[in-house]
Image (tube, rainbow over all chains, first blue to last red; front, side, top):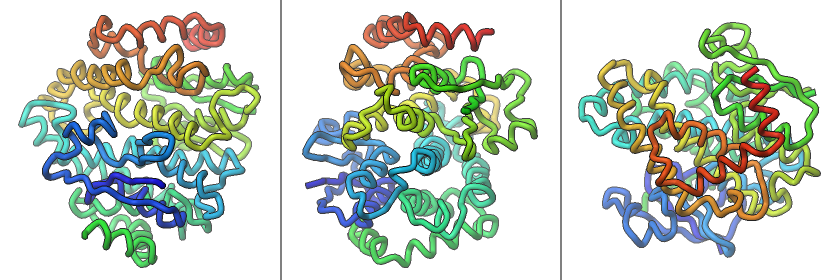
Length: 206
Length: 206
């Protein structure tokens, strides 16, 4: 049995949707981010990084969204969530997810988590002001060059789709002009209509 | 034939070493980062992100170090650079590499690339001052909990090792106290003695 530790409005949403897409047998544990539960000893014993998501398996705990998404795809091959038998196509999937993780999510994190990179209040405020530009530039690239359509990788739905859906939840709060990224917004809308996504959203709001 | 676009003193070193470890047939193209060649039209046509590394293959260009490393491991299975037949173990490898990419490298980038996240000179200077703390905290976690020894994943050398070696090149410039991370420093020394690593370092200095 898999157990997903998640936080509301965090990138754990991507793995949560992928577990549902995969038809996995899993349970969830909500981590209260507003109470800073992710930094408390009970959770640090599960994930010493003090972040969500984490996925407890029979063999140990996995972290890091791109790794968890690939694990879900490989563990449930019948769900067809990644081109598992084609190293180039699989690498393209992973490259997209790595970009979301290391560039897009990082740019977004400068809005509310600036204290990871400076302890000066004015500097943290300067980072916040810059987020529309940095996140906006990321989504410009996704819009123009990376999102093949209708799904991220083209005709096949993959583990890239729940992850893009997840980071595109933050477009408004990050101050990105939606009119500049119509294909991303359309992808988000189509994702939001999927039964698996509706189920997960309802559960995480719960 | 694979073609690696690399920059001196960048994270492209990890893929470069992995290609050598794999016994791959590859060529390299040096991108002059000091001349900002990665932002010029010729290179942007290869990688629109304007970053190194990029790996040109017969089927297209791959980017993002974790994706490239997994691609190299999967394309040259005889080299045994990752536990390809074990989704959990493969995910553990990927989680380590994702942490280096999205947390450690990002913390390091605030030293010289602060303009990615703010346009205020004082803020950029504040980010620079914080790097010893943020990168230091990452390496404390690697030292205490993530580096199993003798290699990152234990007895087996994997694609995690050239990547850790790469980011540990930056310990001194990032102001991390080497005495606090003796196991990382020992790993770096043992890596530097490998023939493949010596060959790649000599070629990138060239």
